[in-house]
Image (tube, rainbow, N blue to C red; front, side):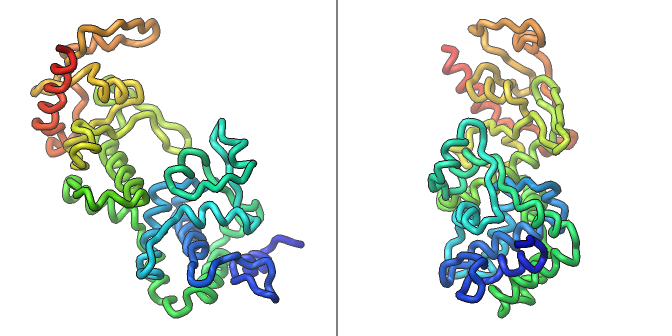
Length: 321
């Protein structure tokens, strides 16, 4: 069978006796069409640039945005369509190293966190990916999904597809300087993934994507970088995602900071533990950063908050004693 636009229009339509290659969707549960609409939207906006579709915070935010208007009475779960679309033949998994046998055995990995732990990304048939690069053909696929699955809400969808949900969340948090969450707001792992990414990206931006400790900045062609948005007071205890409770730290110094191998004084100078055995032949040892001032954000409002630094110093001293 030729995999052209007509073929994928049938693939995106409901499965029936006359259309045996259509989407295999349970009655009243259009998870797959909403995920496909989310992907088409992100391709249109340039958020997905290659045929690699990780279960990213941006994809989750887009899915939740569409779901809230199209299926407001049911709880969303992006893990279900991300997993079950494999059965429709045009959606494939690239496993993370070490998980190849798990994917080959078709073990059911249906929660967002488990998918993110085991799957590097999903990818489409090459033919479908090529079709999605053409705005006219992409629009036809969008209309097929709307006409067959959401015709009563077509006008709502057209408006929703113009909104970048993740960017809107980032803008909202940037205006407020972040947020302290209530425990009941943290029960949905999908929203947790989105929250964590929004915090991380904003903190890295505030620090110009450099490690506050050593100044390291590395990007790859996909704009991935080597630094993390680290919490000073741990999120697991304080639920504090305000940006002044954040530091931009490279992988090594994020790990060291979380284990209280170093801390920061009230003047933003580095204090390194005395009990470290350190051999660093190809890089500057941590002990040589003692007394150096950390790299700070350009805007003072994002400087590390003093009560957060004090909490970290006290824990540092308690462990040293």
